[in-house]
Amino acid sequence: MSPFADHPIARWALPAGAVVLIAAGTLVATRTASADSGLQPRTAAQLLVDVQQSATRQLSGTVVQTANLGLPDLAGLTGQVTGGPVSKGGAANLTSVVSGTHTWRVWLGGPTQARVALVGGSGESDVIRNGNDVWVWSSADKSAVHRTLTAKDQTKAGTPQLSPTDLPKTPDEAAQQALSAIDPTTHVTTAGTAVVAGRQAYELVLQPRTKDTRVAQVRIAVDAEKHVPLRVQAYSTKLANPAVEVGFTAVDFAAPDVRQFAFTPPPGTKVSEGDTAASGASKPATQPAEPKVVGTGWTSVVVAQLPAQVAGASQDKQLQGLLSSIPEVSGTWGKGRVIDGTLFSAVLTDDGRIAVGAVAPEALFAALKAS
Image (tube, rainbow, N blue to C red; front, side, top):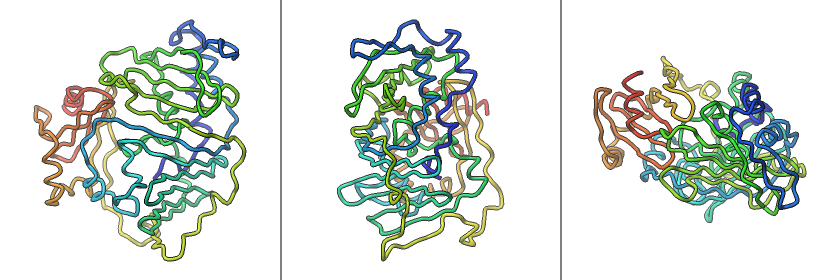
């Protein structure tokens, strides 16, 4: 399910332990945001509390996202294993956001109303949440998937996604992913002020204390008035420019028109239900085991069993050729193929596992062996 399916207050709040650590000064340097722009000085601790306590839940705007993750071209693999209206080609393809520059239109109407639209030259792809209804729509394919959220879905809302196709698509989402990593392994400080989308902002900097991660630092521009993240830049140890940047180019904090969330499939649209129970499709007899996390903080590695649909895709001749372009590796942990990116690396094993982390491949091999 899309990460835009819900925006509960918990996603805006820092863990209580992190706030205590910040207040105690174990993470934050004494430097404060510069007041040379006319803004009052703010410490990193104050900025984090500002974000936590922000009451802004309504806005609309345009977001530009740029990603340079150093990934191979996996478009064929993505299309084969995901299926559905957003897995095919085209400029407005939700699965294409792992590289290049993309423009999003964003509307937030509250905790149960959200809409994001990936706009391209030949069409548009939307994810729309209105109450318990979630729609994923592709104008290019004239198709839509509908899902009705259950109480169980609500409890899972905001759960971090593992797939690189789930790159953050708003500064708020990117900030929450970065802030969730705060612990004693992170140095948090400020870096003066900035102007984003014509608005004054403080800059918050998160820097891993360890050298064993691909993440050099994360910079978050926080709106000086609304305390909402306006831009997030994630820097890699392998690049001078941000590996991922997502920021508003225009933003309006007025409540969006409710019509933005009332989606009706246009005439000629092929509609399918995303819930297998509702569609009558059979469910798999066994569920994949829960992912394991090896390590902590910025060097943690997630090891998971690939779904049968994805693991079996390698039998397809077209996909065999695609996978053969990915370097092959082996060790005491087994055999597989490695993707060595700028912010993270991943290993797909021959026995159907995947290991992902913001670390070098050697750390993934160790995690696979340990799990």
